[in-house]
Amino acid sequence: MTRILLADDHKLFIDGLGSLLARRAGIEIVGAARDGLTAVGMAAELKPNVILMDISMPKLNGIEATRKILAENPSIHVVMLSMHADRRYVVESLRAGARGYLLKDSASEELLAVLDRVSAGEIYLSNKMSGEIIQDYLRVAETDDSSAYTVLSPREREVLQLLAEGNPTKEIAGRLSVSVKTIETHRKQIMDKLDLHSVAELTKYAIREGLTQIS
Image (tube, rainbow, N blue to C red; front, side):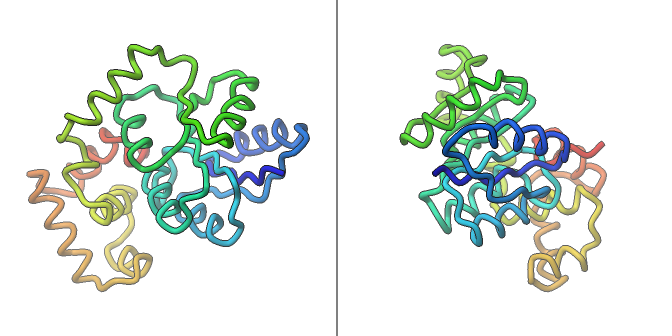
C-alpha cells in the first residue's frame, strides 16, 4: 500500500487529486495540507511513502518544506507539482531532494506513472519537458549562483517569505520560536545581501524568485 500525503493550498485541486488517486488500488490518501508548515508537521506525524507537494504555498513554500521533511525522514519520496516549467523551480526542487517534478496540467496517466517510477527509486520529470531542457536544468544547477536559493540561507528564505506575505515581525518570531530581535537581524541581513531597502522591494523579489505567489 502506497501512503500519500497531498500538499496544496487549493482545495478544489486537492479534492480532484484525491478523488483520482482514491480510485486506484494500492493507494491510501493519509492526509491533505493547505500550507508548507502544515505539510512538514503532517509528514512527521503520518510518515507517508509519497508526498505530492505544490511549490507555491503560504507560510512555507514547497521547496523549503521538502528540505525540512527530508532532513527528518529521507525515505519519503516527494513529487513537486507546479503550473510552471520554470528552470529555477526544477533545479531547486532536485537540490532539495525531490524525486519528481510534474506539471499540474499533465494527464492523469502521467501522474500514476510518476508514482510508480519514484516509488521504484527513480527520478521523474514531466513528459512536457524535453531532454534538451532537462539537460539545461542540470547544467544550470551546477553553475547558477545568483538565485534566492544560493544567495540566502534556508532560514533567511523562510523569513523572507513570511515578510513578503505580510506577517508582522512579532508573529514571525513566534512562529519560528525565536526573538523579535533575531527576526530583525535576519531582515537586515537579507536586505544587505540583496541590496534592497524596503519590505516592498523584498516582496517583489520574493515573488520574482518564486518564494511566494502573492500579488
